[in-house]
Image (tube, rainbow, N blue to C red; front, side, top):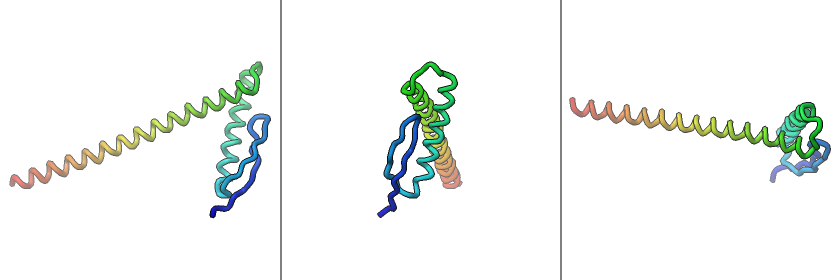
Length: 101
């Protein structure tokens, strides 16, 4: 069984208790720091908005980044698949040319 850890993560002005796997602690704390840094930037830019708006805007920004990375990964997989197909076709054509001789 994995070693569990109870931590408190502060996002915005609220604290969230979480039970996580011990080896994931750094990842959770880094995620909270990144989100809080983004929230701070939005608070400076949009000082008239409430905390809910600021958190929504920060979360939206990260979802956009996630979608961009997901698309990039999909493109990388597609390019790799095309390269593999190209290699297969080249091998096939070489075999065909060799069989004719």
